[in-house]
Length: 75
Image (cartoon, rainbow, N blue to C red; front, top):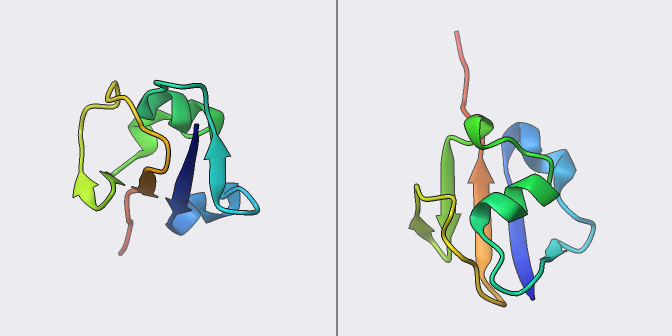
């Protein structure tokens, strides 16, 4: 299956060139993060098709859009 990826902030440089990530069928959010070399603990907000999710074991479907936002620091 192929999903669309939108990575924000410090993750932006990990975005695949075409914005698409190929994964095995029934792959989870955690598998997608691992393929992008992003540790679960580094994710602040994660959405699938515009809905925020917290369960990284959630399976993905072909054509899903996953957006990942890192923690935002400031001072």
